Length: 128
Image (cartoon, rainbow, N blue to C red; front, side, top):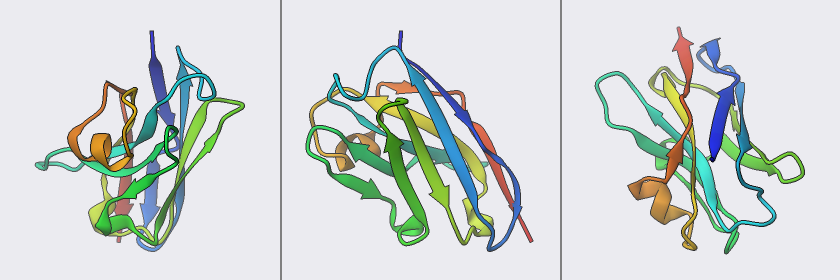
């Protein structure tokens, strides 16, 4: 069974930084084609793909709202994915979810339309 566990959320001021982590189990990055990434859902809004990375073609996808501020990375040895968030804004406040999809497609596809498995999420609150 694939499981994803997020950590690193919290309260941060505008302009600050946070690093989210997602520990995975049930599959290995090196042995399985996958797209892994981060989604978020703000109060009253739909869930949106934030940043994703495909292992099958190496492509990445980032939402326009976070380009230049958020960076996705992985530690393949530890099957962990990270999201470094810099210059945080009030509108970044949301529950952030780690997610993985096992279709062999470019990252933008599952990052735009949804993935197979999601974690339970971690709350990021940006305050003024």
